[in-house]
Length: 116
Length: 110
Image 1 (cartoon, helix red, strand yellow):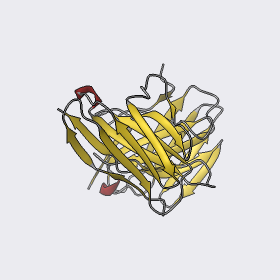
Image 2 (cartoon, each protein chain N blue to C red):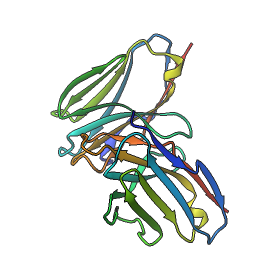
Image 3 (cartoon, rainbow over the protein chains, first blue to last red):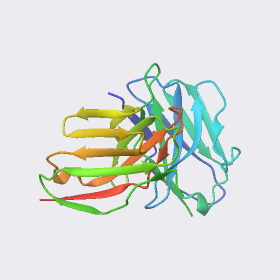
Image 4 (cartoon, one colour):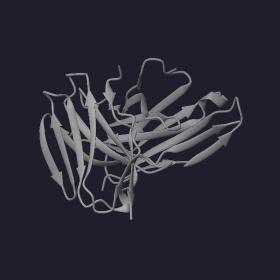
């Protein structure tokens, strides 16, 4: 149990376009989901925390108008990178915390975004 | 100084060895501790999670937390080549925001 999926697994887009990444908890409900970013050979950095039905909470330095997060259901959160630029190229990973569970977070397989 | 320090390795051991992975931290408010395993180009896989101090065992894995020393460990018994991966420690003060270590690369040689 506790499987999290992401779609797409990789995407290439042109500079100036927007890209949407989906994160789904497949076998549990997740009131809270998290979005992380990971650069090559670096660890994960939290971008934002989203709670179902509420606005996301962004970490300091993360542009909320650029990284739009929607958590409309207990099993789905989306991250939209708007007007993407090459510096947005990265590995984006979501995690989910089980509703009624303790504190452990289960991670998705990640989405590799390349902006050309 | 980083909040969480973790030796990046690589740590190379022979198959069957006991592996010891460690992290130190500076924030005394951390009380939730987790260990993840990450293969190249994949998302992290949760291995162990503990709350506050103490030990926890699950199969070949044992997690230890010493809050007085701000030091956590993960032990892997009977290591296998399939254990070769990057191991990340992560911790939180409120159960929400996880602060990760840099990750230790482990290589188990057959």
